[in-house]
Image (cartoon, rainbow, N blue to C red; front, side, top):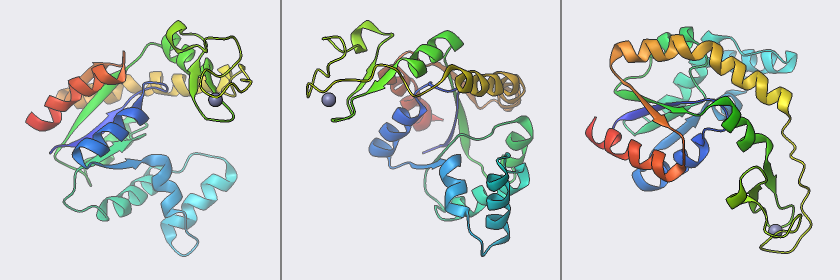
Length: 211
Ligand SMILES: [Zn+2]
């Protein structure tokens, strides 16, 4: 099985795809946020650098993120890996090649307006956790603000705000061309339209089996 780097803007459905590939093919998912949390440790040099940057509220430096990722990868020697949430920029993409190989890159593409609707329209039932999206008819609750499943009152205003969505999408848009170019030149890039999780899954499955 090939290793996989999932590269995508916010709301492209990375989480769902990771879960499916984990379940069906025993992939080990290394999400960069989780990697940093796992390596946050006052006893190690890398851990202290992570704590320092996070306490200041700044991005963890590229070399530290790489070292953290290397530590986590060592836990899964010889097993199939998915990396998600990384690389964030072209420098990180190049650095990754010093510690990771035998991989393909799948770029889940989703346009800004659709990604925005998926993010901002999302509503969770506070009681049973069913997820709705008020911007999509098929995902909307059937009776106004009442949960279809448990009848609880839904708070239809999402917690996600437009400003933070825009920042995240902007970061993606600024970095994506160089990163996609880099992987395209290496011949390992596959772009998949993130129209639905079934569709994405069906596109990825033959890639990881045959690549
Ligand atoms: Zn409910």
